[in-house]
Image (cartoon, rainbow, N blue to C red):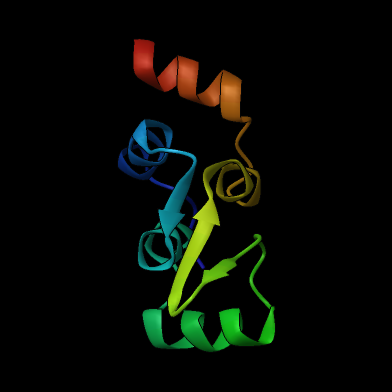
Length: 80
């Protein structure tokens, strides 16, 4: 797993209340196939919501998993 890049931080901060699982896995540096298996087993380091056949990830939980403060980091990234 790699750390978040500035591009990932900007993208996460610009998103709505939830993001899709594919985006969250990319931001965390987790491979897609492994990530979907982990989601099914509840093993990801962030909360995953299942809506029918779709997985959604709360943006605040993704930021926490990335070790970022949602308000401080997003404000810093958006003004930098």
